[in-house]
Image (cartoon, rainbow, N blue to C red):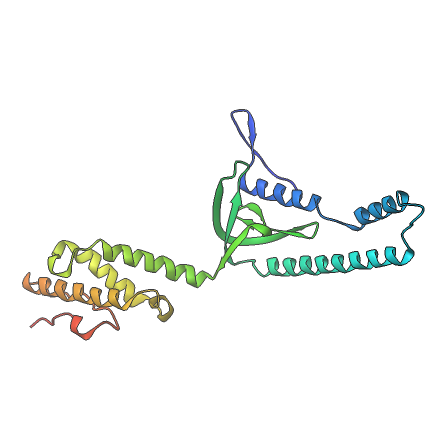
Length: 235
């Protein structure tokens, strides 16, 4: 697998993705495989006490135990690969640690998955990240609803109390009411009843101001709000 490193001040700077890959490779280097086991077995036979040699039964038992562990590791690797494949197209969060120990979080959609030596690497924004660095998986509908709720809350927090608003707040209140009314049922679950009722009060007060100013248009009341917060109808 080829990696592209950036150069700063004449020195190679390792990116978060490269550090993630090198970290995974370092971990693999310490894993036990068949060759390592056979080397240990030969060494054990070579340097055993000739007066108390290890029996064939013990060698077979050791190999059988190692085979069971290896099968479990292979099964775990297979499950990881299947899990990685299911993440293609999903929104995920990756938590990486740089060489200096600094932790950073990368969020984005998984474009594709690369496999290397039974390890899976997720491609996000053109960079590869180890599956081991996966921190969270989120549904796209959840992210949209979460972003809408965040923007809605920020808009509400920017307003004074309902009794202190004036016509300069018309655009903000109208936008908030239209945003809420355009939300689907799932997205509205991220908005509290208190916020909906407060928005109704803002709309009610705004329509009173519009009526007093002789304007015929009215802001739409939020759907599902408290009846007491409905806007006052013009005469």
